Image 1 (cartoon, rainbow, N blue to C red):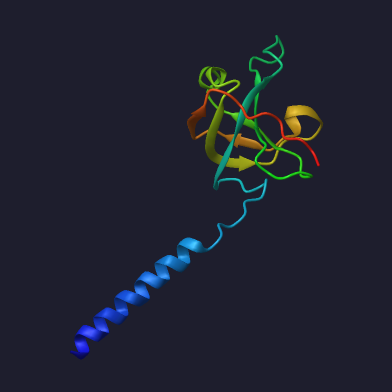
Image 2 (cartoon, one colour; image 1 turned 45 degrees about the horizontal axis):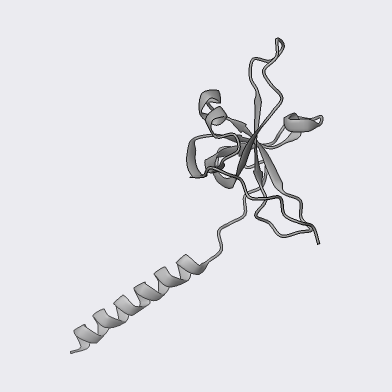
Length: 132
């Protein structure tokens, strides 16, 4: 009988531990957390076209899920150009390592999300949110 209660108690403690671990918030990733897997969901856009000096277009992921007055989060995507071009105007989930962007302005200044995986979510992007 004691063995049965011991096993039941151990099972209950194990379930409580798993439940608490599942409810713990995920650690926040900083923009300079290179090498770690980062996940972002948003709308893919192309900024500029390939030019003679630059063979690649810049693709940007804009995540508008935050609440105003916070601005949307933006990431420059580093991935296969043919895949990214197919998803311009789509909502996608992108995961991969995140590194700090270069200096200056425009897309070059954005954090760079290296596309390790891309999951299609929707053929359209949500309307821009209204500021309060």
